[in-house]
Amino acid sequence: MLKEESFTIKQTEPPFLTIGVMCFLSLFCIAILIKNDIFREGSAYIFSQIANIFCLVFLTVLSGYLIAKKETAGVMRYFMLLILNLYIAVFFSALIGSDYGSPDHIRRIVISSSVCYFFSMLVFLTLWLYQKQFIEESVITRTVTVFISAAIVIYAGAIILNLYMPVLFLVTDDGVYSDSVLDYISIFTDLFCIMSLCAATLFSKLSRTRKLSFMCCVFYPVLFSALSLNMDHPNRGVTVLGMLNIVVILPICLLFFNANDELEKDLLKREKEQTELQVSAMISQMQPHFLYNSLAVIAALCEEDPALAARATNAFSDYLRENIQFANKSHPISFSEELSHTKIYVWLEMLRFPNKLKVEYDIQCDSFPVPALSVQPMVENAIKHGICKSREGGTVSIRSLDTDQYYIVTVSDNGAGFDVSQPACDNREHLGIENTRYRLREMLGGSLDIVSAPGEGTTVTIRIPKRNVTPE
Image 1 (cartoon, rainbow, N blue to C red):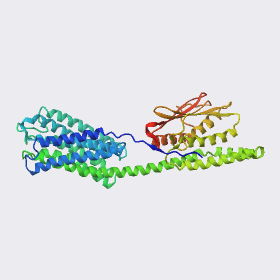
Image 2 (tube, one colour):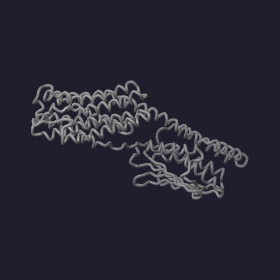
Image 3 (cartoon, rainbow, N blue to C red):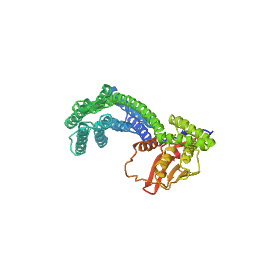
Image 4 (cartoon, rainbow, N blue to C red):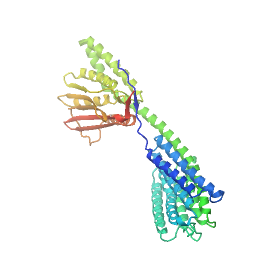
């Protein structure tokens, strides 16, 4: 009996640099607000700045949670992009509030306002990039992407133009916004983007809850731009802008819970697919021709060599039992177990081809994990498609290496070979290879490469990164 080994799959260190930068900027913003006297105006102004700080902290914590949970890939990558975009908009909104009304900081107010305007409008694009992942690709989605991208580019041009002449806003010598400049450009751009987003959302097959969450998120830049038409009081725009940042919380929470619900569904779907792949692996490995031929060999041996027939029957029974057990394993097994199973298969095949098949082993290490039924199928392919198709027969070599970065397993033969650039003739064999490649990648971050040429044999190389594996 083989000693079963357990392994722990290492997780890569999460990229905490982003969170570190966000924490630093949040603390910097708080320090600036305190330095510039957050209590210098009325209670509305104080609440506005507290709302800004609260939003920065919330977005930082949410980003940290997503990164720490490794949920920054696929759909969540775009959600993270939306969060970072909102963070930048709120950060510069807070900087505007800290300097607003200070005549000696006019240039800083103008720059902060320009950046805040741009990222508040960019919310539309980042929201759409995230939303698009849940909508089927169509003419509408492609058109909306082009429209929103073009609107953002035009708006960026207007922001740059505003540095030289007031078309969006004007900061007076007193460090406050002038109500003489009405920002119709932002209003029209907002309306254009929101109509595009609403059309794409309403015509999609999204659930009612998800549609609501997207609509809520759209209102943030709309309300922001609406402030441009309400500057009657010197600091009303800044005060209301800070309060509006709290509106970010509702849509972000809705999006977050919806996204996590979507991830849970995806996880269940992937687990189901993996189970189906494992069953498919079991069925694809138990090829009917192998079963029939093995039984035929055993039947012939019963008359010629009863003792060998008994050994072959026991080996065949072990092979079937292990095949079924391995197919139900969703975690890696030791290479030594996989190799033992492979040797049973090879021994049975050598009974069929005593003068045609030769197998060599060069095992330098066997205490590392591999997915169950990952090496044996490669050996089976080497015998079936390499050696058996060669008139003279040949040799199958099974090797394992322990390098600085990888555990490496190679299965090579000097048989018929094939052209790897051509599609596989046997779709079942192709499915078995893709199955093995998928499980290597998902379980261990490993890879499977095939090198072959007609008449020159085939070499299959499996690499398991050591950084992902720690023996217990």
